[in-house]
Each structure stands twice: as C-alpha cells, then as structure tokens.
Length: 127
Length: 175
Image 1 (tube, rainbow over the protein chains, first blue to last red):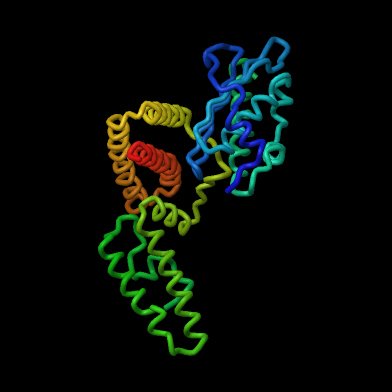
Image 2 (tube, helix red, strand yellow):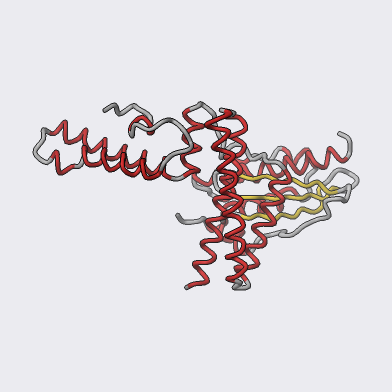
C-alpha cells in the first residue's frame, strides 16, 4: 500500500509530539485505541481562560496513517475553542490525508481522541 | 456436505473455544482429501467447481480455527456479538496506559538493539496472553458470558499485535 504525500510528511516530521501535564487543570487528556490494528493514541489539549486551545500534544503507537492523523489534528485544534474542536469529523481528516478505505479507522481514532480530550477537560471543570 | 455450515460443523467439531489442534489437523486433512482437485479432474464442470469451493472453504475454516484469537473472534461472531474492532475506540484508561508503556519499552529496546530485553518482554507478554486465553476459554465455553468475552478479546487484539511487533523487532536485530 502506498501512503499519500501528506501522510508521509506528517509521519516523517510529526508535529507536536510529546506530553502535557495530565494533572494540570487546564489540560485535557484523551486516550483511545483501535482493536482492529492495535494502535494506541494519546492526545492532550491545553486550554486558556477564554476556552481556546493554545497547545496540543500527541503520542501515537501505530501505523503511518494513525501517526499522521493525530499529528494533523493537533495542528487543527490549536486556536479553536473546545466546542469548535468537537466539530472536527473523521471524514475531514481522511480527506485531507487521502486515506484509503482500510485506513479510515485511523481517522476515527483521531476524532475520538479529540472528543476524549475535550470530555476530560470539561470533566475537570465540572461541565 | 453443506457449504453454509459453520467452520466447526464443517470439520465435525464441537462449537467450543477449547479445541484439540491435532484433531483439527486430522479433520482438515480428511476434508481436503475428499475435495482434492485431482479427484475431480475428470468430473463434470459443475462438480469440479463445487470441489474448488469446498477446498477454499476448508482452507478458510482451518486458518480461522487454528489461531486462538481468530477462533475466539469467530465464536463471538456466531453468537451475534460484534467486536466493533474499528468503530469503537473506547478502552479502559488503565489498559491503554499499560499498552503505551509496553510499546515504549519495545521501541526503546529496539532502538538500543537490546536483544536480551526484547526476549524478556516477549516471554512476559507470551505468558500474559496465554493466561488471558484460559480466561477466554472459561468465558466462552463454561460461563457463556459473551459480553465479557468480547471485552477480553478486544484486549487480546492489542496484545497479539504487540507480540507481533516484538517478534518483528527481534527479527530486525537478527538481520
């Protein structure tokens, strides 16, 4: 199977790899996994006082498409409010990276990781 | 023979997770011998085609029942329990955290060319996986708790993948 240019770019130069302090009240952490491929993804967002995501980090163990999907969404969520981040759809990720049908689940993983990170942040703030 | 029969029925085996591999092997050889293309070389076209379909079906059945993970997945499918392997990405946080740590350890050992550590990780994981299959056998064959078995099989899918990755890392060091 051949990867698209964008997937290879994100895979070779992943953006925002790393971790944020999960105990920080301004940080939301989302962890998800896809049994189909055994990929595991951790995505964290740091939210400022006006509810805007100012930083995002990820750590993904999986194939190139999974790494590219998480790398891409960390770029996309920065500057968005948490609610705007929730509107990111896996189909947009798949389209941007030109993922083949067998790799669509990688984009689902990335969408679910954002949702989980936002849910964790909201839980910390009693929403 | 009935082409719509499930894989267990095809080999005349009970529909259970616990299974004698030697019995599976011998039943597979029996079916293969019956449908071998050589036996149908001079048979009418229809019969020849049917024997091919049978041979294909028998291969698929054998490969599915032989591997414990595939067998467990197939039993859940027969019981009507969907694993949602692609669509459901929610797993317990402690399990995912543990998976992250495992993968980190494997990556470090691979990068450092640490053959000994990889062997150690492989043996530890192998033991863990074996224990989990004992539990899956009890859930599927004795308790018939398919909901819990589904959760356990989902976890095993991650672990089998990890085992494959360690194996791959070991092979790359051997090169």
